[in-house]
Length: 116
Length: 109
Image 1: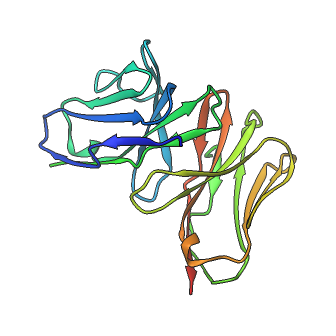
Image 2: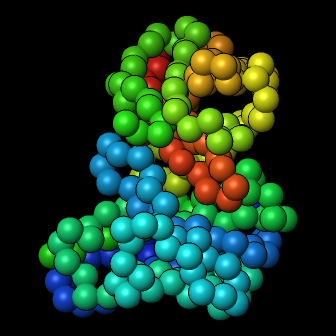
């Protein structure tokens, strides 16, 4: 149980285009989902917290207009990287909380974004 | 100074050895302490979490927290090649997790 999926697993896009990443909780309802970014050999950095039906809360230094987050249902959150640039190339990982207990945070397999 | 410090390694040990992984932290507000395992190009998987100072054991894994020293450890007994992965410590205040950089561990058969 408690499986989180992400789609796509890998995406390559051209500079200036937008790309959408989906995060789904497959067997549970997630009131809260988190979006992280991970650079090679670096830690996961929290980008934003997404609650179903409300606006996402962004961490300091994360541009909300560039990283659009939508949490339209209890099983789906999307991250759209708008006007992507090569410096946005990274590993994006979502996680979901089941039962409101943040310690039980289940992570998706990640999406590797490469902007050329 | 980072809130959570973790030696990135890499760390290589022979199969069967005891592995010790450590993190230090500076924020006294951290309430929960977690250890995640991350295989290459995969998302992190929760191994254990603890709240109070002391030890918590789960199979071959033991998590240790010393709040007075702001130091946490993960011990792996009878290490196996399948334990080869990156291990991340994480600490929580409210709903936010702060991760260490991860230690890359290789168990040599």
